[in-house]
Length: 316
Image (cartoon, rainbow, N blue to C red; front, top):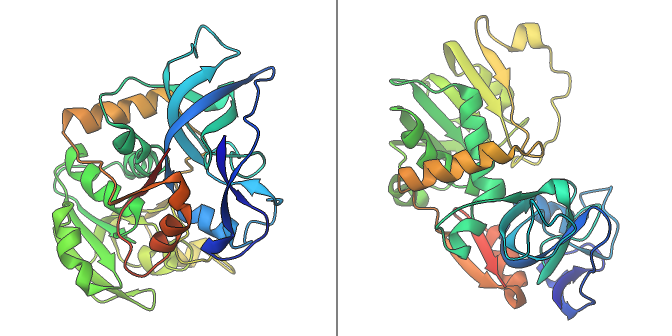
């Protein structure tokens, strides 16, 4: 089969498309014929050598959509079944979705029913599931003011689209690049706010904040809440992983809350509920860019470039 292999850390040029042996099933694992996969910032970090637990060579890819090609669970995962898989250390502890076939533990494979195309479905797993879970955790209600920090990212775009379907809220989103204002408006953002040096160029406060930049901006986000407000730190686009010397009593305002959402705990019913929300509200989940497996270098180069916007998908 064709696969994209990384032999050592580096730029997009280390993504080599080569022929490798197709995996064979083993007890408790099932083989998926991959039809598409979304590309994620975490995979860029891994490719750059910023994931210490990942050993090279490795086939990256923390998500994939496709059909069952060979199975060890004929009842739940019959051959031909449409499935989604993501997280669970795929593409990190074992080879991932940057290949024509991927071998995955049965418990990490989720059968789905959907009318979405492969390109549309490939845009959903990690990105829309993360946005959906985080928005559920924010407990949106009609009339609230929602801010999305990191609004031009794949999860940010997904959250903008989902938020209006989930509640009658006003959606604001941040960007460091004001030339992306029209793109943000097109995906449902009501107000655009410029982000400068991890600070908001506004004094306005919000009821709910989905912070995709992460620890680099969470302390500032907490100070931007109205009473009863919630910050969900559900991303690390700022390149900072922890909150050093964070003192909760002084840094979380009274009657405000800090939470998060971890997409690694995948719930199959929540995933199917998400697909139903997308269908019922006719949410446009088409990726902003689509590439072929042999074009993985170009996909990575686009996503880490300053002009990227939304979700990038690579089809087999």
